[in-house]
Amino acid sequence: MSTKVEKTVVVDVPLSTVYNQWTQFEEFPHFMNGVKSVTQLGDDRLEWVAEIGGVRRQWEARIVEQVPDSRVSWAATEGATNAGTVMFHAAGDGRTEVHLVLEYEPEGLVEKVGDKLNVVENQAEGDLERFKKFIEDEGYATGAWRGRVNEGAPVGTPGVEDAAASRGDDGKAGISGKAVAAGVAAAGLAAAGVAAAAKGKDSDDEDTQPATFEADAPAAPATPTVTPVAPEATVPGEVPADTPVDSTLTDPAVDADVDVDPTSGRIDDRPAGGSI
Image 1 (cartoon, rainbow, N blue to C red):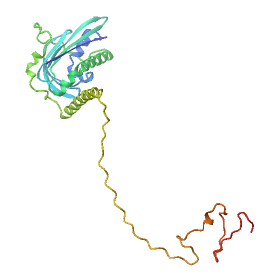
Image 2 (cartoon, one colour):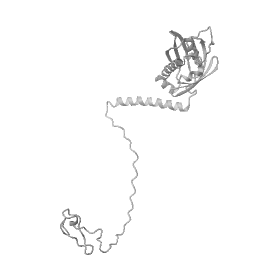
Image 3 (cartoon, one colour):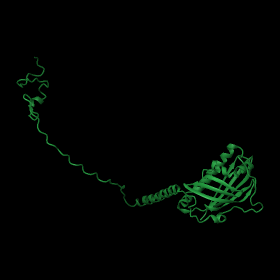
Image 4 (spheres, rainbow, N blue to C red):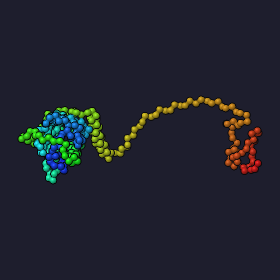
């Protein structure tokens, strides 16, 4: 199933200047974010490399009609299936209307997800706006090709049926593994959003508890080994550490600064604050 995109932009530059700049296909990467490179293989053959929505695509296209100051029409001959026309019309007061018609077939999961999110449509609109800014800032074309292709036999606006030779790659042409991973991740996020919405709806009918995650229980600490310590020898005149202390020493009613006779061990029991 194909998708068609139509976008229009009005440029404040005369018709011939705008058309001349558009014919410089190899300049497209300067103002089209989705286009990585365009190689002119001949007057009517182009090789494109683009990356849109994280998907890198490569294809060859044939210009099926080109009329100066009027239109450029193309159709892919291999790779990504797409075709379309860019038309140019004088809009008065030195302005030009640029109208893009693009039809393409998304191939593979990643491109189909991007199609649902209007990625290509948004990219096309942004690229036209950047083209407008580019040519308006310059004020002149960086080059021109005034030749004609298929003169005298108008083909109208090509569609994907005109690019039938490019079908059959199933979205693989030119896709890098990194781009596929990024696209699949985006698709996964979209799917997760749908699942979350469904879960939220189910929770209206029943109470739910937030999910809890238990980490692995830490290993029980090893029981420390206690080595018996021999009691210290008592020095004569010292009171062993485990000897009960006279309660009067800790009685708050007794002066804390008591004197102990070092010879007899007698405690001076004079009242607190007494004079010597």
